[in-house]
Length: 88
Image 1: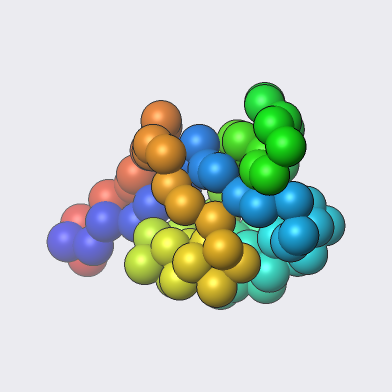
Image 2: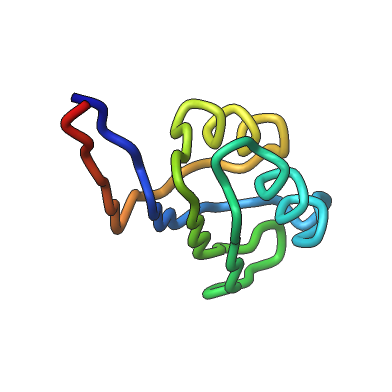
């Protein structure tokens, strides 16, 4: 049996220096990610809190974490996960 992450919602803290557009593009180029929504939920003088919603057939959570780290972002919380299993 295989289990796939189909949807992942992450609350993340990112620096202003890394643009929302570049972060979105970097995450959306990952294999298994077909769609990404980025919503800014809070802004302060140095950072932005963003809610990331990733949707796809097989999202690799470790790859998502690697991209966030490369962008200088930190995960505050994982707020939603949708998985799907196959019996083959």
